[in-house]
Image (cartoon, rainbow, N blue to C red; front, side, top):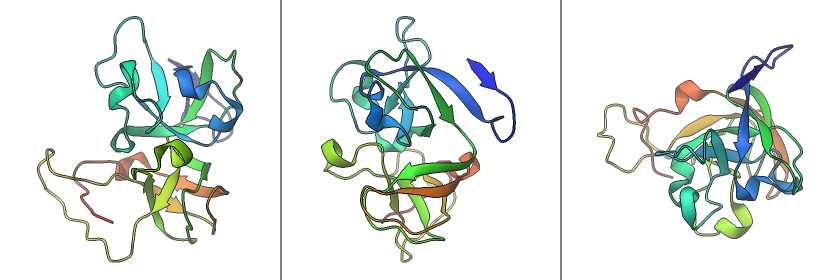
Length: 169
């Protein structure tokens, strides 16, 4: 794992690219890691809800780790992933400035994989629920409005990505 230092880049790491990450459209998408990585997979990131087979079969929106920063290509081996701070992210639906956001986890994974969605104002967040319960991982807060497919700015805060925060939207 390589750390990139500089202005605002202290929370960027370098990861190997999973299959779907090797495309120009993966920039600003959410990625996660395989829970039980093998030595062949190493420190590999996968776009959330993107892959249906192989190592990435359990990479769901519940396991979002950060946001891909680099502009990838089919030949990319490595990518830069932001774990904390200000980042851009792609919207799966309308998001308003100030909304709490989470990784999209709906059924339209082929068109909305790796994107963020707002958590409804009516969602309840309760601490202390068992980790086997249904949960929603809050990834951060939107800094501006955005529509489906648009890139918005958000404050990515991994301290909010915790199984202690439970919610349904």
